[in-house]
Length: 239
Image (cartoon, rainbow, N blue to C red; front, side):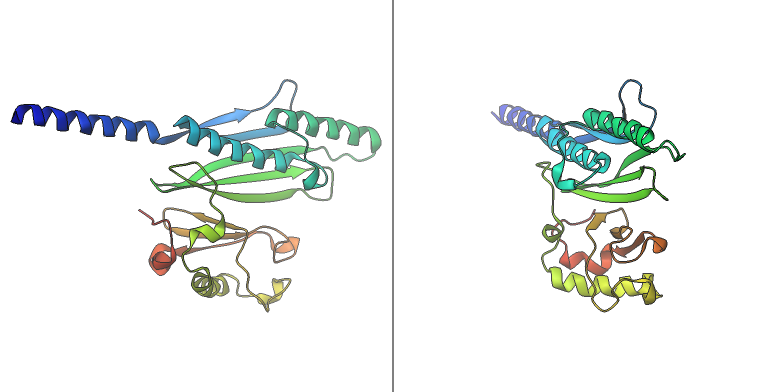
């Protein structure tokens, strides 16, 4: 009887262990392109493992890429896939050459992604996009995407904290250390959290893209806050 109980317990453990393994999400690097494409390069992580979780994460990553390649009003995106977006970007480039043959600047787009952090609770991914559409300079933009590891659903910034206002006070202190010359800011009277907040192995990274709080010449403003200073405000604990 005791022997049978032992076997039953072992079987239950193996079933739970296998279920846990099936739920784990892994990532591999992939390159996305189309035939006859020479101006768009995309290198991103692709989620694998649990089909539902991986599909949700990959879908959001691809939506971010589609948005980065879109030319014009961001509310008028019609592309339904990354491949279609590459085709449209190439077509717009050819049209630009035809309309403005005197301009030598050629179009290009480089999009790269990396997994910044992964735990049983949360996954943070950074998507860096650089596009040049014939202007005086290109456009660099970084997006942090946070996902629930168990469901694959996007986590909004406000959902990262149990006390957003208390976290904001700590973040402002670190922001002031990172930006010593406040005259570089468009508005140095009111502190606002950035649109991009993501996890790293050492702490939270807060990133302001170009034009978000400062002119183009200032570039990207980025700083980190160690977990030890904000752990009590985090809904998703760090490892």
